[in-house]
Length: 222
Length: 307
Image (cartoon, rainbow over all chains, first blue to last red; front, side, top):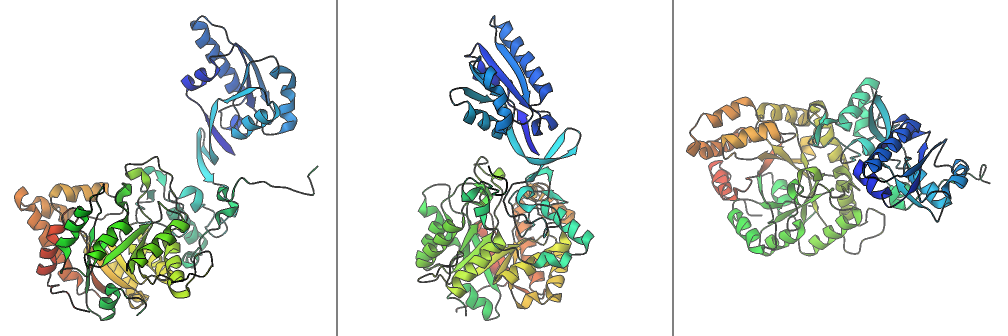
């Protein structure tokens, strides 16, 4: 899923301070799972903002709504009536959600309330880690199910570098060395020999380097 | 001979090679490059020129290499994958070769986190193994990485690094094998303090016959102080400084520690000369270049052969 973290309160306050009314929009998908921008966080942020402005002798009218999926025009359409009645929109979805609102409601200011972080998986309760960079040409089948692009700090395709120490990356004791993990998996699978096959220079066109990407499914497109 | 490289000539002749390094200055100070390189004249076969080492901005490796080449010395152009994409790397290789630089070292590079621009984008378009492949393709096939023909292909003698002390140890011979497969001609190793472990790695290297496919230069860094020994032991990732080496440095008074460091370096070279597959030494005297001639002399590596 896409993970996100709420922006610092001061930054959110600064973005909405000029307005009298805002629409605070959550999303029921990824940001709900990572507890950054679901219904619950929408309620908490609304209360916190109201308290802040109340202390300053100002009232901020906040309308709360959490959409099923903010990156989907079908659901964003649900805002059509409420958007007109507010000065600005504060979105708690990932960047995809923020942009879907901005694209639909062209004359309304939209501010992000979260920083979109990465595509990750849950390690345990309250901990998420990056797992995928969306390079567009998955190599997990040859790297034992561990991604060197997302998980090696230098995205080495033929690692590990000389900084791997006791299973950890040179950048931090809190970061696992991806190539140690790949090697451990290769051993467990009995495919150690595969390590010596050189992974050729990657074609980054399938990644962000090729320009903004799009998927068109002719069989589904309307 | 694949190239005009002096290092290649020496290694091919079966003589022990000696290289050292020169870290370019953090500013437009060409005289600093000359000063450091001059200290190495006559006692080494080639001078590595580091590429933004420890992820700190410095004079570019190729520019400092040109200065050194113009002094009549032989630079080894170091190139890290951290700072440039494949377009920039290949153009720098052509540019350097146009100034007669014919030996280079392909490295991953330290992560930007360690330097003075931790906010910088981390490129890694290629990794060090793929950079080796790229340089070899440029030289042997006369083609760019992207496949187009090169008019006037650069003929580089290709080096890379190996760290036998990083983890996982059991993978370290295989990683070298991968670099050999990619086309590397010579290897300069991480600084060696744990000689037993290095020799164990070399056994693995020789068992697979890799010593016949690549020239290995053993990395030597003299320690100035006991504090430096402790720092390298505890703080430098992928460095293996055994306790007895630290104790030996601590066991002499402060003013004699530098001499002890040089002694350890010389003894290490003497021992490593007898290790099968070691074809030379890479002496990295960090900000201590003036000690290199003495170490080379005391280790019996002078005079350097004429080729």
